Structure formats: structure tokens, C-alpha cells
Length: 423
Image (cartoon, rainbow, N blue to C red; front, side, top):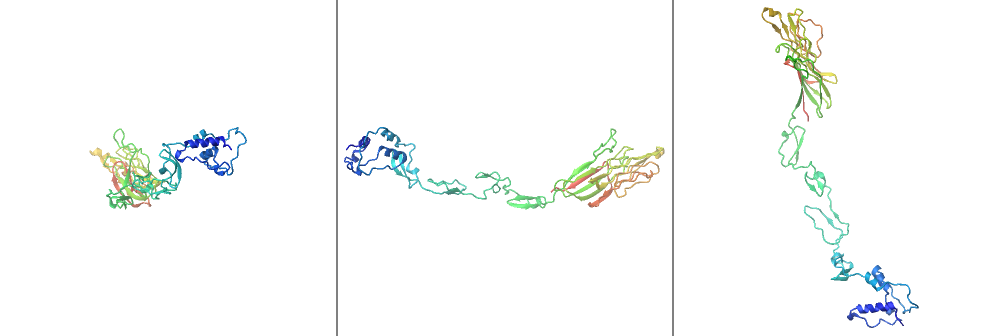
């Protein structure tokens, strides 16, 4: 009985390549015995490519009935092409394969079926710290974690420091160098010193804004002009709840020392941020027929030019929503008696001082009279011209606290000062 040619060739090839010490010279059994069964070339191919075990015949050998004809199996060259070869560059080592598993070694010093030796670390949890943490060598199953901390937020990190990618807050600073105490800090304000919050007790420094006469101060001759001012405004800043207002009325016209001095008024008012005040600052006029800005009255001249009067000074007043809050009256204009000039000297009669509830004025013996100072309310027109100008009366709104008035307190143009504390 003949063996198939391919089987015979394979048998011869294996016999030639096997070491002589392990060569099997006796047949495993007669052709009629299952012990003589051998794997085919296709079984070897499938083992190399697919890992399939192959199947041996269980009965006696059956002689082929004809030539193979069309190729039905892979050749030995194809089997050699599919078989692994030594690869010292990419072949795995035992330390690269998980312990408890096997692999086919391809290295020249580690060929064949081998067992892995890589440690199985399973799930590894790493806790961050101030120093680098060593990651253990070996297999990690992918379920390990790096521990986190809910306190790792910007607000817990000092400015200028970054911890694991989280930058510190500009509000977190080192306060160890602080040396202030509560008395150094304005009342209600807070500061951190050496890790402790301190609330200030020092009185707040007041701030003030001053309003002056804003018209033409003098004409081309150097005479006080004081008749063309305009209203000014001031808005209560945020956080301000109370203001103290001081007003000075303008001096009346005349010889620089004879015009009645402007009055003074002061009071404190509760306010709200954003309220807009209107402010008029009185002017001192040196023009005979023009009263000072903000209510000053013109003077009058005697019909036979034996005397004439100077204009009254303007009032300084503050209003809110069209309502008067506080007013300082202007000084009355002075009068000049030229009758005495015929006797060798002129006679000046001083104007009345602005201020108090009534103002003031003086009797004069000619028909010339100084103009009244502006006031709140103004004097009624049509009075007899036998006086120097009366000082304009002042005014204090009932909503003011700590309010007061005084007469004869201002020379020159008027002025308004608003003082407040800005927390």
C-alpha cells in the first residue's frame, strides 16, 4: 500500500530536519492502524494561521482513487512563510507579559512557549502629595484612580501659587506682615492682619466740595462785576446718607469796606445717593444799576446827585427738586453822601449785613439808597429810599438739623461748601 506523495514528502522533510537523537525510525503503526495517522499540510497551515487543533483519521488509511488535480492544500513554502521567525527587536519577554499567562517567545534567547512574569497590580490608587509618587511597575487593570480633594479650589490657594493646575485666588494673600489695629482703619471698614479680620474704629475723614461764584469776577476796570453767574449742580455720591451745607451770601457793593457783609447759614440734611442739588452762589456787584447775581437789588441815586446807592450782594442758596433747602442772605449795598463833599468831605453809610431772619439797614438823610441784599424770601419792592441797602434774610428748611444762621460773615463773592462722609 502506498503513502500519499505529499504525506511522504512531509515525512521525509521532517525526518531530515529533526535531530538524529530524536529521530523516530520505526513507523507508529501499519497503514491500517489509526496510530499511523498524520496531520495534513492544511492542518499545519490552519494551526499556524488560526490556531485550530486539526483532526487525525481514526480508521485505516484509504488509498486515493485518482490524481489530486486542482491544488487542495498549501505548500511547504507557504507554511514556512506563515511560521514565526526570530525577532530580537520586537519579541516580547517574560517581564512584559502578565504572570499566569503564556506566550510564544520570538527572541533568540527565549524561543518557544513561555510563561509571563509581569506583576499583576490590579487597580492602583495614587494619593497626590508634596513629592512625586512612584507608580509601581507591572500590570494595571485600568480601574485605578488618582485621589482627589474637594478642598482643592482656587479660594483655598494663595495668590501666585498653582497646585495641580489650580491657580490661587488674588483674595488669598499672606497677611503676616500686617501691623494695623482697629484704630488705624476707618469705622466699618475691614482688614485682615496676621490671619485675623479686623473691623475699623477710626472716624471717617470727611470730604467736602466747594462752590464759588462762577460769573465774571471783575470788569475791565477792575471793578467787581458779579452779576452774570449761573446755577451749579452737585449729585450725592453712592453710600452717602447725610450732608452738611454751609452758605455765605455775597457782600453788598460800595467802597470795599462799606458794603454790608453777606450772611451765613449752616445745616445738616439726610440725603439719598443720586439726588441732584441746584446751587446758586451770590455775586458782589460794583455796577450801580445792576444787583449782585442771585437776588441782589440795584441801588438808587439822589435826584440832584447829592448821593447814590450801590447794589446789594446776591444770596447763596441750595435747592433740591425746586425747593429751597438753605439760604444765606446777601449784604446790603452802601450809600454815598456827596452833600458833605461841599463841606470838605464825603460821607459813606455802610449797607446792612445779610443773614438773620430780617437782615438790617440804616436810616440815611438823602434820597439815595443802597440796594437790598438777596434773601429768602426777597424784600418787597417799593419801599421808601431813605436807607442804605438792607441785608437779605437767610432761610433754613425745617428738614435741616443742627441748623443755624449768622449775619455779617462774608466779604466779596459768596460761597457754598457741602461736607459729607463717604463710607
